[in-house]
Image (cartoon, rainbow, N blue to C red; front, side):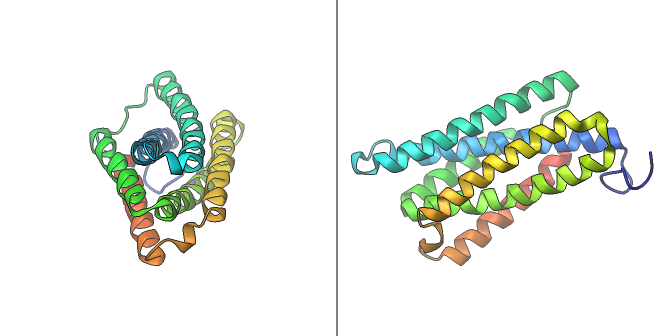
Length: 188
């Protein structure tokens, strides 16, 4: 194994793969919880049926992603993050809070989260490409999910994410929180 194939200096390729799986599993879990929080608000508002339906569809995509990462975690014997109880509460709270701020704020949340996930998944795909054929199935799964996350981001933008009140601040805070959650979930 050359230094080029190592995902991060100082850790083995196997440890790097475990971190990828752990953090991706945690991220998909967090995404499911964000949508559950948003739906807890919008599903009870008859005049927001279209928004609730769109969010439910995206939530279903995230559940498919989570189900796949649940299988990968089990197949590879990867320990999930110890922070899942925090992501359980934080994800739901973020979703509900942004929904309570309105549709555009909920879409801004989706846009911010999916932008960070795109960057994160693209980096992982690049690292997996450098490892060769042995991790091609994982690489292909992550790339497929990355493209689906981009669809969510683009839909959120089309529905007014960038018109949310205090969008630059809201987006920046959510992106920073996502990046911190990624770093913490890799190791914890």
